[in-house]
Image (cartoon, rainbow, N blue to C red; front, side, top):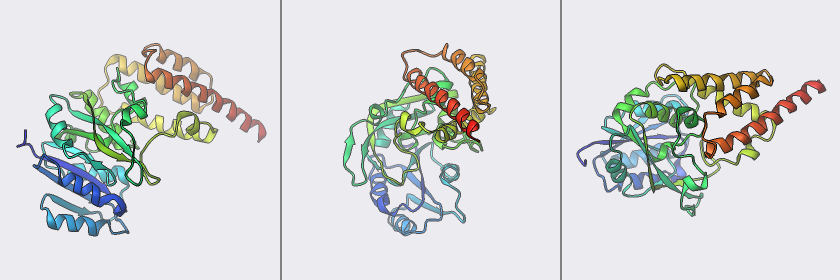
Length: 316
């Protein structure tokens, strides 16, 4: 499949520290038929200068400078819209790709709309601290329905490659989505599906400026009432996207989505009816799944937040 053009869609913003190594790893891929489409989001450091130097040396690099800052989600949307390849691979500005990443993903994607891989985890200095991102995060890699998929987003954008057909279907992004790879994976799931490659094909860098990175653990993230409410706000945005006419839920998925939507509504109202809808939804979930285990913690912190809100109201 060497004849297939693969577009690398990269969104950059103030990425001078790690950008050169990432660009070098992309241009040194064993699969040579690529174009690198970079949209810079009004960087104020030397990011643009670095990209211009690469573009001068290698005609496969195409740089677009945004006139105003779009934010990373809208910037990825713009970048994907400019890709001409039969396949599109997303790239962050701070990782390092294995030299055979594109070759392996192209070989293994088959009839799926999207394929994603495992990753090494590296720190700011490039030291590997985990051989498997999927194992480190205990990823739920094979969701049985789209509700499980949105609660446990399985696809990390920087490890993914997808078809141009999917690329056209995801545009424009749902306006309420807050992470682009979740939206892409939802549409892929409802098209020709998602495939997982268990080989670590990138070094996924973790540092303090990551837009999206490792979780800090459910207990730590959602312990305080305010953080729990912020978490629920994000979950609600997922359901807005879920009911988009482009997702095309079947009857069972639609029923389950409605139950979970009611759960979030009653949470906002601090109404115990939310528990009822939660347990109804859990009846269709595999009790051994990672999704079910996380849901139990989710319910625990829902209860804690509910009574925390009661205490707040009482103190006013």
